[in-house]
Length: 336
Image (cartoon, rainbow, N blue to C red):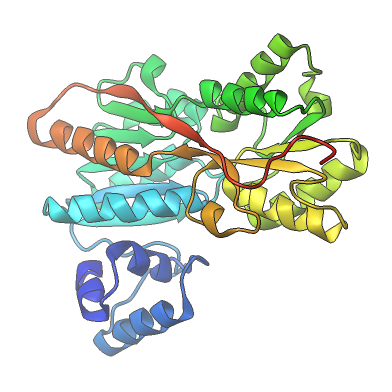
């Protein structure tokens, strides 16, 4: 039995089945019960740590997801799996901790399972620079730019994070905000968050605003809980802030709850902007103003580049995917 069989028998998509078998929190109880009932009835066995799917063939495409609570990656993964399935490919999907070494995991997987290709959702360029030469099969990195690494078997597609972050600061400045702080990620130069922080600095310098990251940035992991705790820390040391730019929607959602728990209002007291444009941003209260990444294009371009490389040894492709600032309900001028 394969994951595809479980999807067919349960009536759920490959992405949903993957999240159930990986014990991912973003799954309804109804879906979880149905999928696990099929698993029990037909005797499908995930591996010992219950976090990775059992690979059913030696020629599957491996999809490695960086971060277990990243809502954007969950969306992209479901689309990637559907596209690969439509192309007749078997898929192995694994969620890794956001601080894990995804390239080292891929190297171990190469020795054990011999996948025909890799698709990385998120990644630290330092790991790629130091270790990726050991991977010889085609690979694609989504949401980070690997162009400067120069590997012949590695393509990459990403939103232009620097420009997008500048757009957020410009927007907040135009709405009258001058005390803008940033929440999420870390300052490592090879992480995705570093590019967003660079965009923040460049825009703030243009507007003559304070841009010392030690003062205006509060690091945290990409989860609602960490966004919640990070926002509380930030408000303790910067109670005069009027706008908060969270480097991920999942962080922003936690921050909104923290602001409300402290007796403040969004956006009347503190405006909040996220990053990703996940479906949750449309259903939060208030609806979250955010940078919308085009997950459909990211998935389509990534899968096509990987299949082209596997099937006809096509050269690597590196490209930026358009984004948009989705203006919703979580920003207003300060003092309103």
